[in-house]
Image 1 (cartoon, helix red, strand yellow):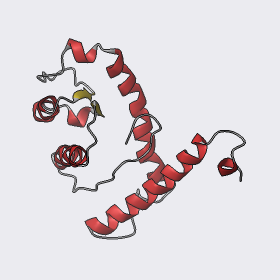
Image 2 (tube, one colour; image 1 turned 180 degrees about the vertical axis):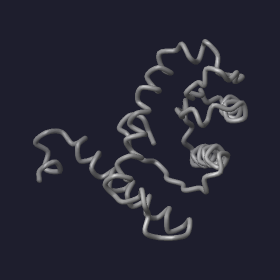
Image 3 (tube, one colour; image 1 turned 90 degrees about the vertical axis):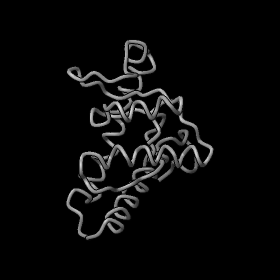
Image 4 (cartoon, helix red, strand yellow; image 1 turned 120 degrees about the horizontal axis):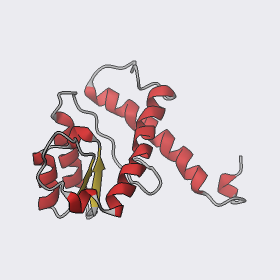
Length: 150
């Protein structure tokens, strides 16, 4: 998800294993770079506060805006990163990402999916993400624009 407008950029469904999410994030970042999109920073919650993930971002010259676990020492998450205004802004905007997951669960029916299999579940999430993007894009239109009229 991009922070500026809270739009989904790519959706990937993995089997919850505790490590699959971090690996999927690294794969998605690599895919973005392969497509010519080089992120300056990546915001993430505490589940991504690992040495491996932060180090992988640093190696790609991406600033890790990962929520810090106070009891955990992670190389690369130091005072320079945690004290920067960009990090604080990224952590505040991360709430949009959480809203992006909450809306499909509560409104679009992805909390209790009615399909089986990773591919079908992923399609349900892609459709829900597209619907949320359309709603957010409609709100971006300037007032009085023909696109914004009901």
